[in-house]
Length: 449
Image (spheres, rainbow, N blue to C red):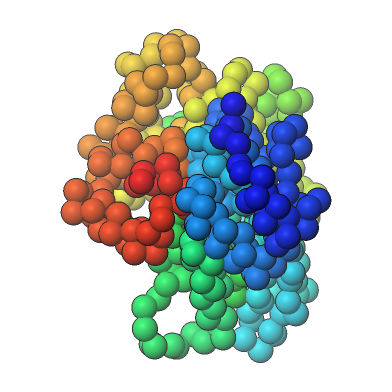
């Protein structure tokens, strides 16, 4: 049973956001479980403010009552960071959906925390958002900044932190901090927008962000090639980063995931003959076709230039997260290593998992050029931490990170010492204590309070 909130607090919250936007009982069900289905809580209430002032009012009340709060955006996270696992109040930011007019001269736009990434990307016909993720139609600005989302074009534009030109947020006690001028050069103090990017709702609640926009690609070419090993995939991706001037994406997946999509989702094989590993490259510009063809060389490949044909090739990569779900509830681990160790990680991680759980199914896919591999595991043995121990220890031995883009959340908190020293974790705790002395913001995430 969730902890019951005092009736006086519920009345005060209703006075701030309106009674229809304080949900209790069965009405909270859709906010209680994460996208994977692995993380489920039981919130005493879901509060749905419509603007920054209401967020400030809600947090002031919860801070004063020492009631813990979990901020939630599109609820597309994969590590339990937005689920009320310990009976926290859910602060849903979905109604903060104001999208300002694009500033075409600066190539920027200001968006509320509840605006989807697709809406930002469509804000101006000639401009686009640099971050492209599979969940873009439901993932929101606030959540993407709070987790420093990466995605399919990090090699060209960087993660969500690199898109920030300003931020507005509310501290735990209801204090509003706002710096949305959008200046590229502005050395007037601490860069708190960068600090809040990737903070997973533990330091403040993001309410608006000013984001840079990039020129929209107009002459896209997509190539999907078949290769004999992750090593060959990595070598081709390195050649693409060096020789394809307009390269936007370098993505990989393997036969394990593809076979499931063919047998369970109705996709057809993309190439005449199956291959152990696949590399998808996308580039923009008049010379892209020839440059990509040079990278593909003699390897079997499919080429697409029309929007429909490119979407067909991209489906093989973007639907990879579905593959493991056909077999059970997957454990989703996103990790990264230095470029020199990427092929070793991609080729070896399935064997590492098998050492801990011989019956487990492992699906790998991800981003070649930025060192990122998504390891999706359907366990056969109890999911008691043995899989994380195996994968994270392997990644650490390769000088890598236990979280490339999804964050630490609830899933990885106990393994943070593998990636961060005691001094770093103490610094995290001191920063967290300074900004949230009451300890109400996502208290069980990242560095638990």
